[in-house]
Length: 328
Image (cartoon, rainbow, N blue to C red):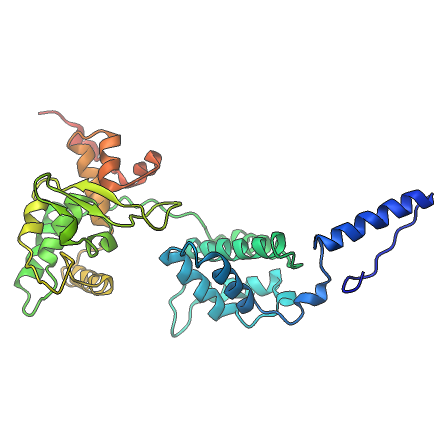
C-alpha cells in the first residue's frame, strides 16, 4: 500500500500468501503500523501540544501535570521523534540531576514524575495515533537512575514542629513590622484544619456555614477528579474563630487573600532567622493530621477532615510519638 514500507514473506502455498497479504493490508488500513518516515519531521513539542489539545481541554490537567508537560516542552521540545532515544533521555536526566544557573538540581522523585508523564504522552502517541515512537527510551532512562543509585521513591517525612517552634513562628510574624500576610493565623489554621496551602488561600466567605461551623473546599485534590471535587469539612477547635476574625472586603471573596508564592517565600525565611531547621509549611498539615489521631479521632473521621481518599495514605502523615501513648 502507498505510504507504507515494503514487506515480504515466503509461504508454501498461494492461499497462505493471499491470507497473509490480506491481513497485512487490513493492519495498514487500520493504521496498526506506520512507516518511520511519518515522524521524521515531528518534534516532541508537536506531540505534547497535540496531547494537551486533545486530552487537556475537556478535562483540564492538574497544576503539577501541566507544569511538568510545559517543562518537558522547554527541555526536549525541539527533539525530533526519531531522535527521542534512551541516550537522549539519559542526557536529559543528567542535566536535571546537575541543575543549572537558572534551575535547581532535581531529585530522583521529581525526575521520575517527568518520565511518567512523558511515557503517558508516548503511550497515547503509539496506541491511539499509531505513530512509531520508541517506548523503551523511558525504561532506559529509569535504569540509568537505578544504576547511579538515585532513588525515585519519596521519603516519608517524620519531622514535626514542636509547640515552641510553632509559638516562635507565630510571634515572629505578629511582631514583625509591615507584615501584611496574617501568618500568625495561617499557621494555627493550617494545623487545626490539616488543609493544604492552596486549599486555605482559596477558601471563600460564601462557602462558610456559620451555623454548622463548616466550610466547603472547592475542587479539592483528588487522584482522579481534577474539577468538581467539592468537600464540606468541619472547622474544629479555634479554626472557626480564626476565620471569623479575618477582615472582610466586599471586593475580595476569599477569606485569606494571599498568594501561595508569598507564603512559600516568607515561611522558610522566618524558619531560617529563627534557626528552625527542616520545617516546611506543608508539615503543618502533617502535624494537624497527627494531632487528630492523638485526640482520639478514628481514621474515617480524620479522612473527612484531611480529604484523603485512600486511608492507607494517612499512615505517611501520621507520626504519633511513643511518649504520647502514656496514659495519665
